[in-house]
Length: 340
Ligand SMILES: *[C@@H]1O[C@H](CO)[C@@H](O)[C@H](O)[C@H]1NC(C)=O
Ligand SMILES: *[C@@H]1O[C@H](CO)[C@@H](O)[C@H](O)[C@H]1NC(C)=O
Image 1: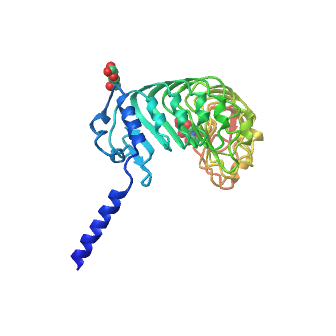
Image 2: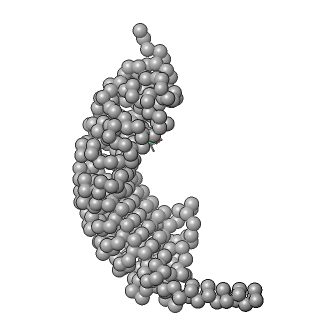
């Protein structure tokens, strides 16, 4: 009896698993065209016309009812699981024909070159577009604003140049913009996150570019959780990024810019965990309020023009003196005592 039950169970499992949809014809055609447009690729060995594209290891996921491809990932990141891949050539136009695609990711692919193709705008369901640490070059295309479902845009670590398109600010669900470690120039558009639905929290990473000018004061009314603008050439005020109303703000890193403002008047949100404003031209004194910040565990104000006594007391940890070093006239623990 037990054996018969097991046999029945195995038959049932076989029946149900083989009854789930196979790769949709249209998607299979698009994927084969995608593969064929590379100069050379390791996909030639596994992406075979004779097999179900939903079984193409490590890179493709299909909806089990419709057989539509919703997830496509190519990664040579040594930390992520899956099959190693090489792609030599530019991002194929055929990717635009995968109309059910929600996630498209390329990472750690130095031979992936050329610009971001306009056919991507056909992907109306795309939630995540991630092209990181590749040889992709050209501009950050303004047409990305046509990806109306987009929530995460990560284009970090490429060879992108030109300016940041203001049109990205029209996306109402785009919560993460990552354009870090490229060769971007010009100013940060004030439009970024201006249309973001109020139920979402924003996260911005533009570090490691050549951005100039002022941080847009419109960011004063964006609900950020994290903002990383370090290693640029930004100038002027940044105090509006902080403030007690920023109840979701945890990480702010502005190190190595040319920012210049009075630190004495800044108010900090309770939520702040890491604040790095080192290597700027920030003046004034360190506000007493920092001694009340229970979540703060990293605070670096070194290499600025600050003055006056370092606040102590409350739950404020005694950060190492290197985080206060090279200012105009800061004093008190952990630096030398203030002169009476
Ligand atoms: C990519 O293909 C071109 C043309 O065949 C070749 O010259 C180049 O060396 C290849 N690059 C890589 C990184 O494999
Ligand atoms: C800010 O970024 C710099 C550069 O990567 C890094 O060294 C530093 O640790 C960061 N600061 C914080 C508080 O994370």
